[in-house]
Image 1 (cartoon, rainbow, N blue to C red):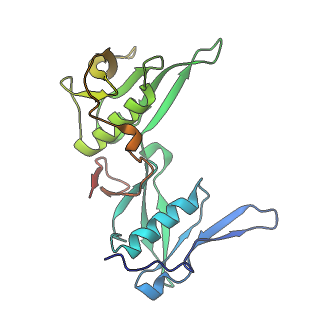
Image 2 (image 1 turned 90 degrees about the vertical axis):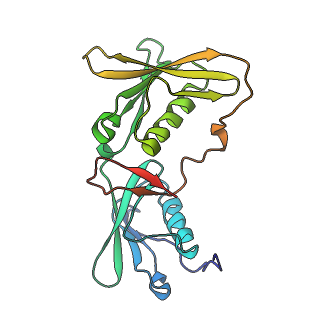
Length: 218
């Protein structure tokens, strides 16, 4: 049961004389049966990550030996000396990214494509035209579904805001398999609401940093 939250346990940043990042760590988690956590490399929104972990700890929902995902990036904790656990992030190449392809003349987005689905999940990459309504949101949702279910096929579709999005399997210019997301208007009541989907939430992952298959756990 979620009993209380100790406000004294928060990430403390250590910098050099020029204000450069050295480390960030907690002090006091050992009082609650957990090692304190240290991060030795700078990442954006590190406070959000630390507070997500601390919140899970006080909810008795955090497995210190597990692998987790935060903002799409995998991490785990390596136990060391002195009751201290180092937060280890997967390399950038080990998670799925969404890349924007711009028009070289006016720099407007032309399409969005994924990078990493093939290497991590042995799944065709996804592509969607930027002019399609909710294109980036639908692409991000499809990536999350692949992470959760393991794969999608041409029978898969997404219904959102009276729009239908289907998936067409084709190949890119290099002959590699690729799913193109196709948009069709229709008049159904919305079923999927991605606006309520918090993709930055801390999630348990069934994998290791060296694993090629990663699935969320409740």
